[in-house]
Image (tube, rainbow, N blue to C red; front, top):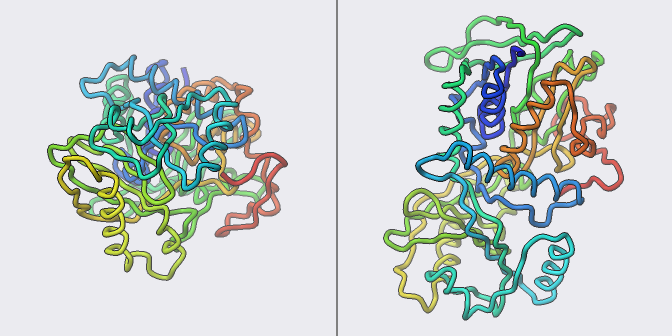
Amino acid sequence: MANVAVLGSGVIGSAAAYELSRAGHHVTVLSESPWGGVTSQTSFAWVNSNNKDPRAYHDLNVAGMRRHAELQAELAPAQPWYVTTGCFMEHSSATDRDAARARMSGLGYPVTTIAAADAPVLEPAFTPRESESLFFPTEGFIYVERFIPALQAAAVAAGTEFRQVRITSVDSTATGVTVTSQRVEAGGALAAAEQASFDHVFIALGKVADLVPVNGGPAAGGAILPMFHSEATSVDTHCYLGYADTGAQKFNRVYISDAVNFRPFGESGLVLQAPALEYHLDGPDPEEHFEEVRAYMEEQVNARLAGTEAAPIHVDRVILAERSLPLDGHPILGFVDEHHRVSTAVSHSGVTLSALYGRLALEFVAGREPESVAPFKLDRFDPSVVDGTSAPELFQQQGVGRQ
């Protein structure tokens, strides 16, 4: 069995720690944040493979959905974290709706059309705005606040250790890997740099993965994971999330549209997005629009209660949430170094894919790359533009474009 470091403690790192420790490996999770990560805690957490091109990416997400169901069955939590009650999706035109249905049906992805009058049979509190909407019965959402603790508890029970450190570099040879880091002390102060040796390192650092060079980074013949990473907000790297308490009124499904998205949150709440207002994220001060976004979310969600007996919903607060997004919008999977001692899974759609990525970590530690990762390997990026600076030029292979 191998001595493995998992870098990152969000949904992907937690799934990897669980799978690796359960298989008998000695696992150490290294993370600057407390176990649970940062981006994972503010995810919309819609589990789906909707409109995810190319076909290889669609298939990867379908496999991720399937693995979530298997993993939940394995751990049998008292409170399920994976809820597959389906997703309503409304389009602004019948042409767009019909095209979406034809496209997803052509992929063998379950979808049906539901008339507005029939929607309350599935969701009594809900009245669609359009005469017909699409319904995706196999989709759902994750209660991240249940998912990560369940994985953490199982991993720790199997021997996983946790260290809160800032990782500064990863260096591999044919015989092992050295991770250089600084321990996070009380108050957030950093201790002196220290090194630890491992047989394998699995990088699951999400949006900050580009800040940790492997073997000195591209300038030294090594690698860096090309992520959208900037101190400024943008529509690529951030979104608005709103939170509402629905009281006694219970919602059970995900709702997606051009105007507003929402899904159940906690015991009696909703988490919401406002796609129509995300252009503010490219402005100089996105937070100054919080009240506008909050009011818009509230207006839109209550409009979808029209004709029901539900009490009006109040959106309590809005936050800025960050996204993990590789430069071409698609996952980076597989080995990072020539020695096959360092591997990674960094991705948008990390919640949907996390359970599958935990399984992939097992393969990488064993020295194998499954065929499914071939379209998503690091070598698809041109090294001349992956130099570790903010938002470098994109290089995309034919057929692998922005999501």
